[in-house]
Image (cartoon, rainbow, N blue to C red):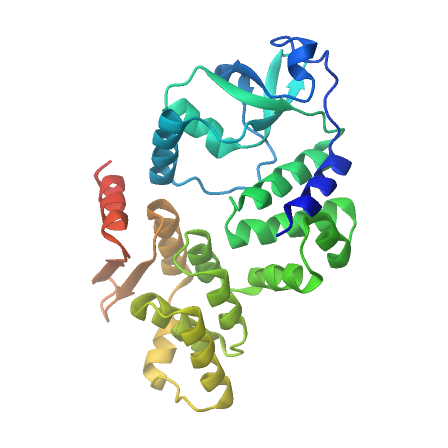
Length: 299
């Protein structure tokens, strides 16, 4: 992604704040340079495009900030009435700095004229830093297009992406929620998601998704597998197995999704003929992932 292109778009969208706005710094400090403000005078962005904050990743970032400092200031706006700041971009760094025990944090103050501009700068700043997962990016693209009334080509120019790149990311929202959750939690990549979109049969797509998780297929392997399915070179699973997938109740699916959101990993619930009995499978993909899940369960 071109930072130069993004930088031009960002400047056009969000003007620099007037020097006299903040009360915690002089005009000289605001003149094109970051300033430090009390961390407790900052509140979260009510339009934050990020949906998921991984606690372990935040702890790692806090340790890094404590040791090396923050590489880039966060972006805020200033509210004169409450004499406080609202985050525009950089909530992970703000949260991690709190964990690190900091009482002050470096900021750059800007003045978006409305919520559209606030949301735009939050999304573009996160895209520059590659801080969003593919689903968050897709939802952000969709919201920008709706809020600003722009098409994919115009959005691509603003964020430094091709029209096809924008289109491919937006198509991820056509995937079932279970697969979208796996994209959000980093269990599969955007490349895996695009390969799954080429499979027309929902049940074959679900089978392939499970195969990716269980066998750790690469994107290239997934693409090859999907092509064989669409070409009719791979037989479907037995009818009974396919019907079992299709017949899973809405309540079970909802419960699985709730547990996946809580634990940040894939969860499967399978019942027996007697629905009062069954198995609960919680997947982990690294030892660190296993430790993280155990900590959540013990809470």
